[in-house]
Every structure is written in C-alpha cells, then in structure tokens.
Image (cartoon, rainbow, N blue to C red; front, top):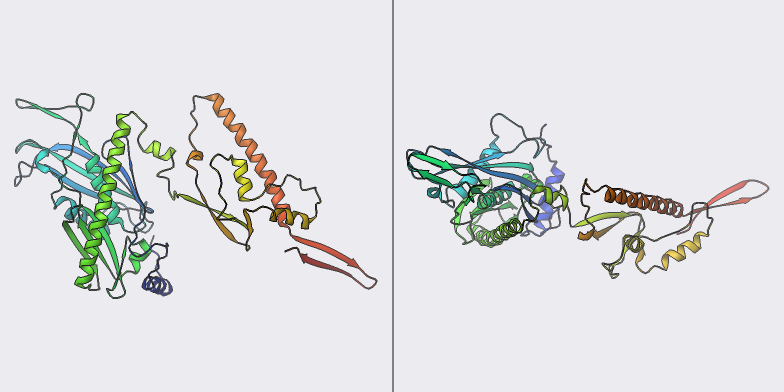
Length: 434
C-alpha cells in the first residue's frame, strides 16, 4: 500500500499555522507529547509510548566469541522492526527500508558510540567468551518522532535488563539460572536520549516532537543525542534547509533540558517497578492492560457528544456520588414513558430548572474526566457468584439506560404539529418550540 500523498492545501495549512505559533494538536511549538513507560514481567521488556507513537522493546543476551580487535569487550546490537503494523505503507520482510537503516544508525551513534554501556563488564573469558546484548525494537504505531521514542525505549530496556550470573570453574563456564542466583544488572555510565525538532519557514521556526504530518511537511529535521549532563553524544541534520548557528545553539539548550526530564522519568519508572517487584505486586503488560494504561488511544478524558446540552464549568460533582446521580448531572432524568402526553412547554421549563444544564447548538461536545475508581477491571473466572452478580447489575443498568433513551427521543421531538380546518382547505403548520 502506497503512502497517501499530501495535497498542496494541507501543506500550506500546516506551514501557515506553524508560522502563527499554532499546531494541529493544540500544543505549543516547544511542547512535547505525553511519555508513558510500562514494563513487562521479564527483564528488559518495555513498552514506551510518546503520544500515539508506540514501541515494544525486548533485550536478550547470549554467549559469543569476542571480536579480534576488542577481545575484552562484549557486543551490543540494536535492531529496529518497522513494518505494516506501524504504518500501512511500510513493507515487511526482505531488505530493511531506508527509514529503518537511518533509525538504526542514529540510535547506534547516540547509544553505542557514546559508550554509555560498559562493554568490558560483559566479558566472561578474555578472547574466548563474552556477552552479546541484542536490543530488538518493534514499532507498533508510527505517529511521528519515532527516533525519540526508540531511543527512550532502548535506553530504558538496557537499564531494566539483568543478565544471568556466571561462575568459572577451571576451564568450565557455568551460567546460572534466575532461580539459582540473582541476575546482574547492566552497567550504564550515562543516559543519552534523542531529542528531535522539525524546521519550518526557511530555517527560522523549529517545533519540538513533530507528528507524522508535521514531519512530512517540514523542510528539515534536527536530532540531538544528548544526556542528562548536557553532553552532546550525536547530532543529525536532514533536509534541504540550512539553519543558523543561533537557532542551533538555542535548540541544543532546550534539548539538554528535555534530556534531563526524560532521564528523570526513566529513573522514576525503574524505581517504581523495583518497588512493585520487591513487594510481590502484580507487574507486567497484563496488569497494565487491566488498568487501561497501554490501550490504544487511551486518554485522560473522554469526549462525550451531547446534542443540545453541556455541563457548566462552575458545577462541581462530588466524588462520592453514584453513577445514577452522575447521569443526572450530565443530562437530566425523566421518569415517564412514551405514552405520557405531557405539555412540551412544561418539560422545557423543568429542564431549565437544572443549574448545571445549559442550552447550546445542535452539535456540542463535553469533556468528562475519567474516574480511576470506575476503571473496568477483569472479573476472576473462579468466582462464579461474583460474575453472576455483576451480570445482573449490568443488565439492570442497560434496561434503565434504554428507558432513558426512549424518554430522551420523545423529548427531542420538539416540533409540535397544529392543524386548522376551514371551509376551503386544511392547513398544517409546524411550530418550533425553541
């Protein structure tokens, strides 16, 4: 499947709004998307999402012979899988694409060439056996700025990975399992991450963390490989626009600040995972899915479309209110059947009595914050009684919602029909109650 070609209208629109310091997703020019880090049950298994760009990485190790030029050092290999799962226009299998090769080279310069991993600590027997670390990155969704997300994922996975312990008895090398001896953590000297910027307006405007649409329209890209100590580990410039030295220094300073925040986020996530494992709490991707932390398009707020009403901003809803009271706050509760012939004017006045309901146009939207207490959770299969009880409650709520829906449909018909008879002809007039 070929990539969709952008029209000139789309390109000019993106260029114009960026010149006015506005972006399509509502961010400022220097604002980055939300970063989330989740760990699997195995060491070195990490899921990282930067906005809607998602990468799953797994670190593995094996015993191999060292290189002749460096007999006392282990090996580090970084592999990136960028296929149709990430984007429909990408091809799978065969020769790696130019985009994949470019990503691998940038990651190797930032992580491998900067010597952040202590390769000498991976040596088992000099000139005979060393550890070979393999970092496999699988891009699950490509929504722009894949370099930053991949660098964070690879670095976090290396910091989270632990290799098996080794005992040397004469000429024999014994590799212990995780049950026999505690694994050994990989030594990292520093934490380099990549920070990307897209260049617009003939090298005068730069935006941070570009999306896929912004990357396709951008004139050039600038990628910094920088650690938390503000040390530059790599620099990549791509595109056909020259940037000034002033802009380069300005972006380098901002990239250093961004690197400090990202490294702090990585260390906090690693510490939290260690505490959960020490306390024998549930960890892994299964727990993250149950808590709705890594689901696709997960949002802190849900968009609920109401036809004619919205919730006033000055109305506060208590946390201890149940679902029924919360529904009353959002819409209104009408406890009558379709057969009830109540006056439309009286119904309208009754609606207006609610202080937290405000009339709007035909299509209006509401943002309602999620309640973490009401996050859907899996029901254990071994508890039959609880499953049945939960099913009954769901069926009751479904019936109640259907009843409310029928009531709202009856009220939404706000047009009243009046007929007047005369000797000559019969006329029908439609009167809008609004």
